[in-house]
Each structure stands twice: as structure tokens, then as C-alpha cells.
Length: 120
Image (tube, rainbow, N blue to C red; front, side, top):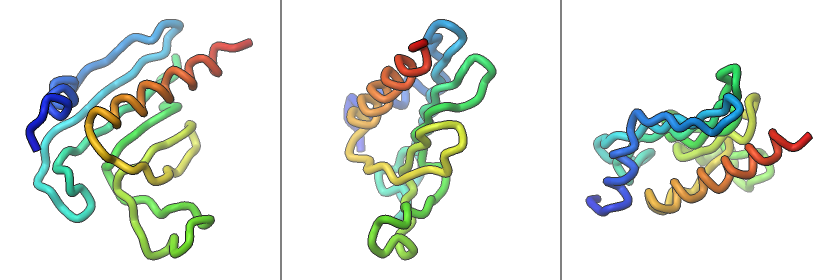
């Protein structure tokens, strides 16, 4: 798995981006041995934090999460790629298709969360 989008994601490892008004984004990404849980061989954590440091959005594959009960057979499938939609979210499955799509999905959602957080 060597393509420019994966390399871009890996190059962003350790980056912190100021989003203004105290909000910030942290990106971590590194290669790992592919496993059934991480078949693409990239471990990642992309997070958006509010001014006091609390994560308010996150995409990662650090551990498995159970899909919400509304999904058929939810108890049988464990998803490693997942996202957290707010500070108290336990995580919902995220379908990783490519490094490019991961970055696009995360930054698009971060923009929406920031716009909503800043609207009086």
C-alpha cells in the first residue's frame, strides 16, 4: 500500500492544526502490520478538540467498537475503523476506503462541527 494519499496521511503524523478560537486538530498515523481488524495496514487517529482540550470529533482505528444495535447482526461484527461524533460518543463504525477519503471525510465533518460550535 504505497500511494501518494497514504504518504500524505503518514507525513501528517504528529501535526497539530490551529482552527481558531481555541479549537485544534491533531493527526496521528503510522504503518502497522495488516491484520483482520486493520487490513489497510495504517493505524490512525484524527481528532478535533474544543478550547479546553476535550475531543469533540474523532476518527480512529485504535480498537474495535460494536456497531449500533439498529444494525442487523450488530453483536457479531466488530469494526476497527470508527468515528466519535461528540465528546460522549462511544464510537460508530466508519468504512475506510482510502487515505484520501479518510482525510476528506474528517475535514468535511470537522468544518461542520466547527461551524455548529461557533454559531450563537
